[in-house]
Amino acid sequence: MKNKPSKFMELLETFFDRHLPVSVGVSPNTIKSYKYAFRLLLEYMYNKHGIPAGDISFEDLNYENLTGFLDWLENERHCSVSTKNQRLSALLSFSGYAQNRDFDAAAVFRNSLLKIPLKKGKKQLRTIFTVPEITILLQMPDETRSTGLRDKVLLSTMYANGARAQEICDLTVRNVCFNSNETASLILTGKGRKARKIGIPARCAKMLRQYLIHQGIQNQSNRHVFSSQTHEHMSVSCVEEIFKKYVGAAREKHTDMFMAESYPPHAMRHTTASHMLEAGIPLVVIKNFLGHVSLSSTLIYAEMTQDTTDRHLREWNEKWFGSEPVESGSDTENKMPGFLSVK
Image 1 (cartoon, rainbow, N blue to C red):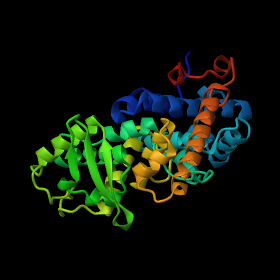
Image 2 (cartoon, rainbow, N blue to C red):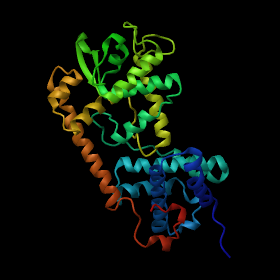
Image 3 (tube, rainbow, N blue to C red):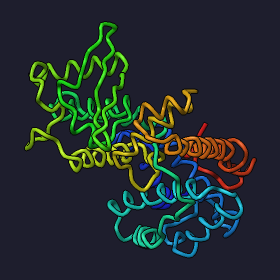
Image 4 (cartoon, rainbow, N blue to C red):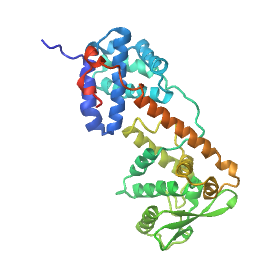
């Protein structure tokens, strides 16, 4: 007679088969990352405590065993702090789902996880978005709504020209010049009231032109390009709220990404500079583009790019050289459930 699956395994299966892909709509990469987390947890419970996957209950996942699992990831599997935090985030996500469906059964598991803080890693020089993160972020605003259209154009323009938040707030229609080759030039007024002329590519220029027409301000030279719902001249705090809103929404759908503690508007400026440098654009060009007085201010991005390179190499090594896959042949012995397959 086939044994009935434990409540833990029953809820875990519906979490992966229905909740994540259907109810929440997270990306396949996030689901794959979550599956790795639970495969590793089941492997740990079997190797260290002798409990096969099919026999694990919520009661087994107490504070001692969960902290032991996270220590095992760091000390024996040599996972980075970022990867370890991703595994903890996966467990937290499931624990919330499980407790909403069977409060009593999942209480120990959920409460134990809530006692475990995310571990702080080496402080980054600057917060930047990766290229995939930027792609996702710029797709988050709902263009069918007036504020969503504004936010998409604002975020896209900031990425295209590396503007400071205050510079984008101060941008007026007279400071926008559409060129014959379908690009556009913006005059930004930076620190010390110094103005600089920055070009933006055709795709962003088209988006900006359409936005001005949509707002009916294309011929109002003194109007600010971006306004809030209450003020014609948008404030920096409003830009901060826009970033907070869309980064938060992106995190919910892509929980294996956007791992920095916060992403202020200035993160977009850092991102633009770093991506330009990675594309091979000389530092002196980036210096003028950003409006830096001294090249030394721009040199920070050379260090940041190396830090980004190191991070990508570390994540690549973790994925392909032993940090993620469980031991060969262990699935059959440990009766790893089929719904956790990551092939």
